[in-house]
Image (tube, rainbow, N blue to C red; front, side, top):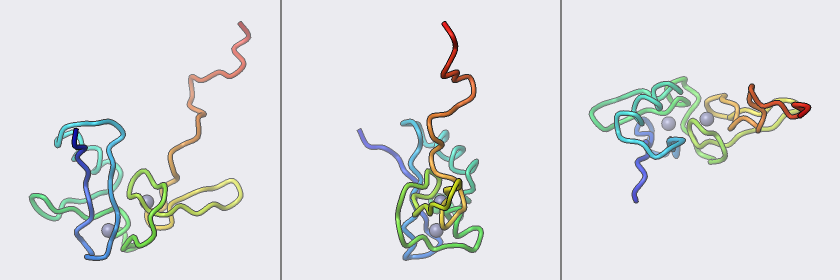
Length: 102
Ligand SMILES: [Zn+2]
Ligand SMILES: [Zn+2]
């Protein structure tokens, strides 16, 4: 099965990519991309959050869930070097009690 992804067309050398968290249709993908800062340039063209914010193009790829860019780690804070998004949050979600006291 081919997974639809969105790539950045703003800069020819931008390597940003948006991978949907789940395999979804084009409409869902489009909406998810927009929610994290991607912008539409045309019918099938997109600009990544980094380029949109003037931080692009993305040249080094890494773990960023929004643009696929390299994330940098500083004490207590990880974020994307390009779009400044923190990488996929660690396994602590709310509603997750790791000492529920059964
Ligand atoms: Zn870009
Ligand atoms: Zn990013």
